[in-house]
Structures are given as structure tokens and as C-alpha cells.
Image (cartoon, rainbow, N blue to C red; front, side, top):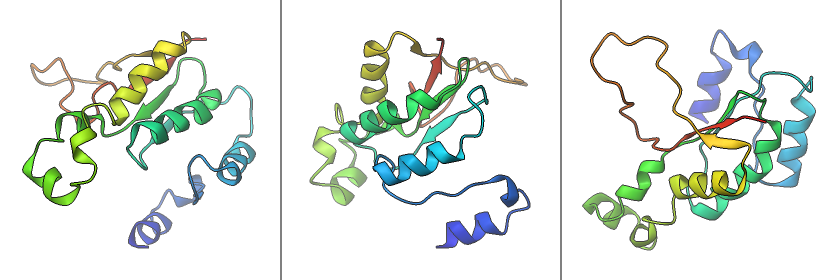
Length: 149
């Protein structure tokens, strides 16, 4: 509820369409499709819901058809792959964390692009870089999936 309120109070709220529901449910997908006004509109999708492999792969399959050529579908929190052995994960997610090495968004993204030749994992260039870092420091490894055709 606090996220919704913050979004509704934001100065750019009139540019946001909020859809709530199961991200791979047919009702939600129909609402998303109804929001797309033009076939050639620039569309980017950011996936940040359930982070298990099957769910993310389902989202990639469902939403990839909406991605504009040259645009991205972004899969968040792939760093989960590296966190299964941490004390916090073992405490907070004991029933799941032991499988995180393969049951994670990063693995789903990599498998998706392996099966869809019109998509590739491509790290976008920094719009500006005032430092010496030439790699992204992120919780989103292998996150940026670009559509080429």
C-alpha cells in the first residue's frame, strides 16, 4: 500500500499506468496488451516480481512479444544465484536458498536468450561515466536482454 501511495503522489503519476495482478496471469496480460497503443511504440519491460526460474521464464515468454526492436526486457535480481549459501538466505529462505544456484532470474534470462535468437544479453553503455569503472556494479547480472529482430 505505501508503494502505491508514493507512486500516486508522484509528479509523473499521470504518465504511469498501474496494473496489479499475477504478472503471468491472462487477465494481467490482457490489461497490458490493452495499454499498448501503437505497434511501433518504444517499449521496455522490467521484471521484478517472483524470482524463481519458472516464473521469470514465464514472464520472459509472455512479455517478450511486446518489446520493441532495439529495446530491452530487464530481469532484476539475478544476483540471487550467488546468495544461496549466505547466512541471511539460510535464515530467511531455508526452503528455497539451497536451489538458488540454478533457480534464479539470471539462469532464466540466459536460457531464454539461448532459445530465442532475436534476443541477446547486452549490457547497455553508460550514458556518462565520470570514473574508471567500465562494468556495472549491480544486483542484476545478465539482466539486460535486447531485442534485435
